[in-house]
Length: 105
Image (cartoon, rainbow, N blue to C red):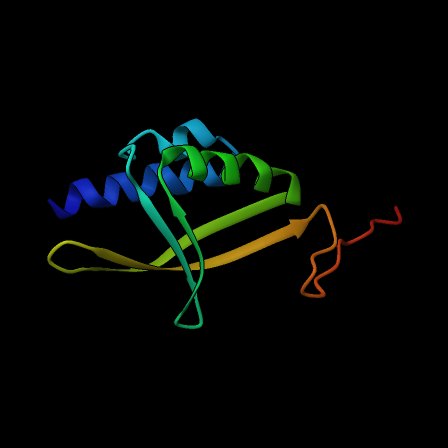
């Protein structure tokens, strides 16, 4: 069971890193509930595959590059929690103050 979960997570992360929404969602159920948690607070909740794909397609335009690497995995009864190391180069300025990097070369 844990190996199957890890494969699903790996498919998602590879798809995310490759900007490939279909690969990201290949293993998802139509009724998926996706939560993004930062600093122990839920920062986004998406209900259903349609909402998830819509947000994922929109988010592709936010980044020049992006990379997630799993740093730890913890399996519990019906859930798996992962921690990631994340890096990205923004394609746009974000409302929270993060700015697009302008290359002057």
